[in-house]
Length: 311
Image 1: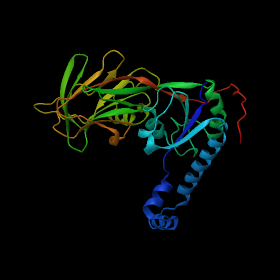
Image 2: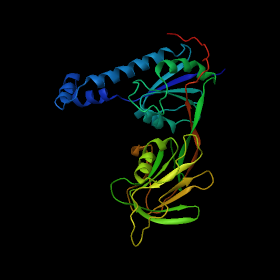
Image 3: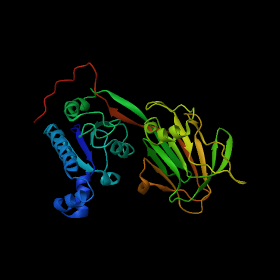
Image 4: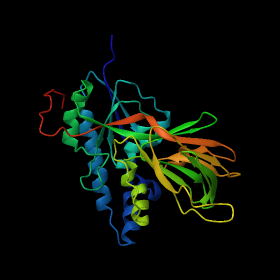
């Protein structure tokens, strides 16, 4: 007997929650903001929109299905299963936080506050997401397979990311390492390396290319290519400014060998707390991940299946 589908709803604490935790009451939070020329109304509005989105999505889940509501901070301890339908309500970055824990489950990215975020990874409004939930269980939704990046260390530890991985020093000290690609080596002292997917090309990598005014063509979200950038390489008698950017395809990984006595780290999608130590002598290979994010997209010009769900 097969299990009923399970909807896993993922959210993160809103700014309103954060203000309440720091200031104990809404009145104190309001006083704090007003004393700085700000108001609480916009923060409360986004908080309410998220709460309403959660309520509508959960109401759309058929009564005989299973369901879980997971906060972002609990993701490392939550076990996803193959039959899950993952609904992420919030910012684009929350989808990236979830992606590395998945293995092909469809993800419905929902923006609860229209216009508040870019919407690159949360392209669905609440009404569309509600329609897609039942269809997702039958494989009747359009998904976009977004490329992810993998960092594999020589001790067997691996890390997957949707936007980019960072290799460098935990602090503002220079990161020292040897970088190797396609038979060419370079010894660097820099602010670290990022290796970006096509999804990440709309964020950190985009900022770097705009500042450099370079000619490197960034990959698209579904391209099976990665782009790497060395941040602020420092030329000296022992370090060079060679191999500071390039493309990694499916054939040859980028290799990085740490020359940091302590403080070296590899982390993905900006989550340093979930990083891997990268100390002297350790070697990392960065390549296209076998994992892909299956991101649901609105189905254009086609009628969605008419499936009834309880209100």
